[in-house]
Image: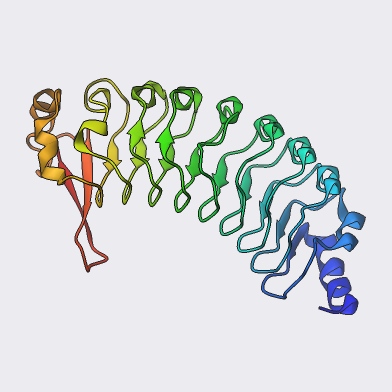
Length: 260
């Protein structure tokens, strides 16, 4: 894309604080953006061919939202941790295998989306993100949910379409966790910690497409306790269920929520 076109976008961004340039085949993060480090709040460079995020990203101290979906990033610079006002970081569809430890310094971060990358392990150091609401790690190659997950403050964790066969019981210690998505993994029924049914704050557990039938969750220890609390969850006059299992019909986009 020509410099004149980028210049036109820059002039508009100087007024709005928003720079969006998607699907233009950009091979690198535009150096020209350095002129706007003082007032850029939102940057979206999705669907380009960017391979490297420069260390200069740390100069954008006013940035609240950074979107780089569908690029060719293999790593992030340590300087990303300087973005103290960043609330949204979307990096879906890249080639990331790990995060720099400095990501844990993004104290304002609320949404971290890393779907469709190449993670084989659950990223470390996210427990210090005290305001994190949503963590999306779907469509990676993660094999286990480690005990360190207990430190997470997320309300929703999406781990759909990984290779997970082990879930630490510590997931039940996540104080704010309400939604846990584990669809299309490699979980046996015995891999589901019973504490999710008995002591966790989870209200929606999504497990369709694993190595067991959802109805067999009735065999889990703790099911009777939960079922007594949710017997009437399909009746409008009754309180909402404590725990629901999401079941998606095959060959259909429709979903149903079934009480346990």
